[in-house]
Image (cartoon, rainbow, N blue to C red):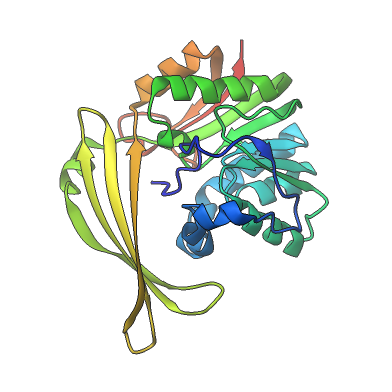
Length: 285
């Protein structure tokens, strides 16, 4: 599941943020809960791009630019969409994520094609309209209440051009997997820090409240020297508010969207009982 709840932090005001090529960091970045996640995001999500980026870039190429992504993070999906569509605009609450997105855009030669704004997907208004709005990588599951979903979907509607489409994806909760991973604690992996080259070990503990439909996770990140001595340890608590497909589809309908395409995976499989992902393309009524 996506471990970056960039849609759930309402403490950040909606404001124009850094454009590509600038860090955009200020004193508030010191309090950014996603600063450490931003540093490691490239290496911990490397394989995800093989699944979702082709899907979203195909939509971007068909729609043309600019594409709007809500919860754009470091630009993992945004930058390929900008390249495919000609330009893209990203919104995220994390200045650290946006700073890395700006750096990545400049490095990829996309600085002139990518525009970044700091804002909350529930309330941000850019006073512009787009042929395609996307919310990839399960970011909607960081919205705790139905009202938050409806607010985010209202943001999507406010930014869609006539004839525009909205695409997003969330995971499909699996009762057997939830039961198997209840109170699971273990090693999530070891990576090299992309900037410092230091060893970074990730540990996770997960518990589920199946009645409230919340996954509670604690991630412990350890920075090691080459001898294995722990130099630094960080703890991060995260709640993910999952919904079942029928609930997601109900919220889309309640927000005034008609679903045009529905998939159970990025390979185009149907959204049947074996689906692990719910992916949709919709338009407003």
